[in-house]
Amino acid sequence: MNDATVFSFYRAAGQRIAAARVLLTVAETLDATYLGGYGIECSLKAIILSFTPSPRRQEVVMESFRGQAAHNLDWLLFQTHSRGCNLPLELLKRIRRCIPIWYVDLRYQSGRLRAKDCRYVIETAEQIWSWTGKQIP
Image (tube, rainbow, N blue to C red; front, side, top):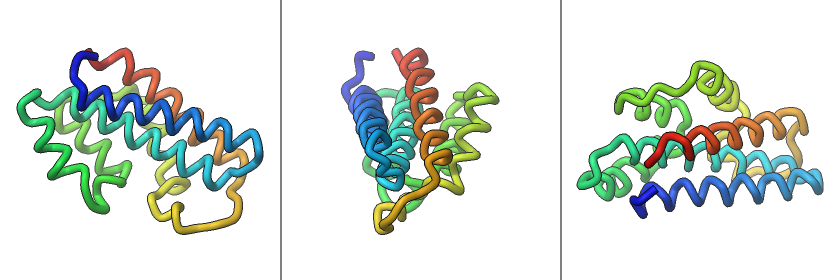
């Protein structure tokens, strides 16, 4: 991983996933789910950037990673596919299953979510993060 822009998103994903795991141990399932989903988002952004020519990466960050769409997992999956990155089918299915569970507006909610859903999002985040680490140079 020799590109600082790609690595920063990859590293942020790992940090969010680690924090999600800690929050899960104290049953803070809403916050853990939010951070786990954010880990998925950052991993997908690292993949998108790694499949983007180096001179255009900063432009993609500034133009495409801002606003509501930039937090939409479906849109991010489309962006990975449009750049020629095909995620393994099982991983793609897992991320799609997370879409109704995780969304950026969780940050404005309070309370708890189902522990089962929380664990699923975090496990998916860990899987995409691990896969991403093997894909990016």
